[in-house]
Image (cartoon, rainbow, N blue to C red; front, side):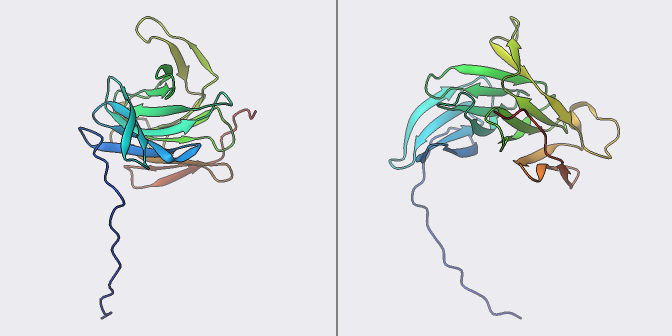
Length: 206
């Protein structure tokens, strides 16, 4: 038997009690490593000052938020994309505080988001409906009264190989994680106990 090995323990630099329900995601500010964004089941997106431990800003939404990432589609500044339990992705301008666009099409909770490594306009999402959807935020339309604001729709959809006919809501096919590499492609992990790799999706680069 191997002798027990003592592994040094490291305490937290700080603990920030910022949400009223479980926190579901956190990402660094793309231009400032002392700042971050976090999402929660309490329906909020918060901007955090990691140096002081303070909440700089809180943006309330109408639904539980499960994941997030950042995009810089305008060339200056950035937006935060948040995935919700209500099946849509919301792009929020953290400076102005307004909703820039809503991405619709998933049929179940959004579990994971990742940006296109080769385009400032691309985004990929994985959801509990068993699909990966690729979005180009330049592809949008004016929403109707029910949708409100600008609405984006997926450029294309990737299902699970070998899954047969998709089940309503993705039962047994839920996706829990997705990442995007410019060389490898889109990699997704799911309830089916598999990791699927899809060849690089080609959005128009700018």
